[in-house]
Image (cartoon, rainbow, N blue to C red; front, side, top):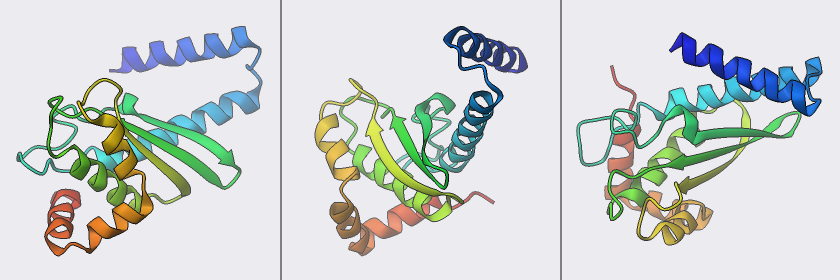
Length: 160
């Protein structure tokens, strides 16, 4: 893992240097975005799958590479999650997206806007699901359903 991290760091530094962005400010900004992305990943990787006794990380529904953070301004960030359902017809993809949204809204320690998507080409109804999980009114309505809320609470509960 350290070799991969070192290689990634070297590659990013080389890209920055070649693109003329190797100023200390640009490198610092890149490091901050990477740190925030890891912070986000650490929060979502422990979310439990609604059907299986495994985490989203264990099922490879989320990975470090599925998280992107961009600076909107000095105090606010755009967090983009692209998750991959276990099968292209996963009936719980919307619920997984809801769990991701709830966990991050509750736990992210910095001001953010959140966009959650199914990875392109990994689900048969990805466009519809993407609209649902990014619609504030639909999310609020879903969380008013006591049965659904209970499932979400169980999925986002931190392991002991």
